[in-house]
Image 1 (tube, rainbow, N blue to C red):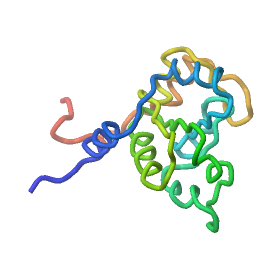
Image 2 (image 1 turned 120 degrees about the horizontal axis):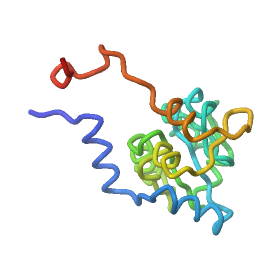
Image 3 (image 1 turned 135 degrees about the horizontal axis):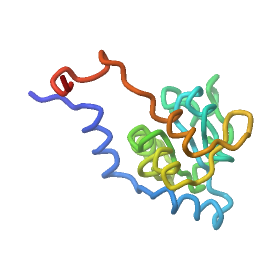
Image 4 (image 1 turned 90 degrees about the horizontal axis):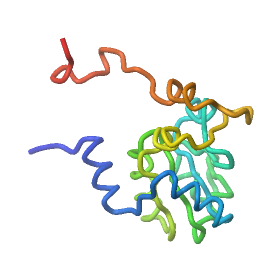
Length: 160
């Protein structure tokens, strides 16, 4: 029996939800002011560099944040069930999974930003830090993509 992996789960989720390229999200933000940009990265990732106007709800608390009556409730997110919502993460995997779950719990116009914040930055679209200060694209590249420690790498794929 084979098991699912993070890659296979996120690929299956991505096949089930609408994916939008970063430059199309940027255009959508200009043309559709009611769009909600939801960043599901961890708070430290969000504080390092994020899309201006986005809200941060880490993936680990997403389901509770989408509902009233929880300590994690995010009222703007609960109220966005009929609004367009674009979910963002670092590379598009967490956002695909999050968008898939949000569809299951009643979000009608939810999509995932393909390529994630890495793709946004590669397109040299603007990012800010937790203080609201612009982040240079070259600096953001180092903040967004941390290097893996050797013990985090699959031993079968490590290069000698």
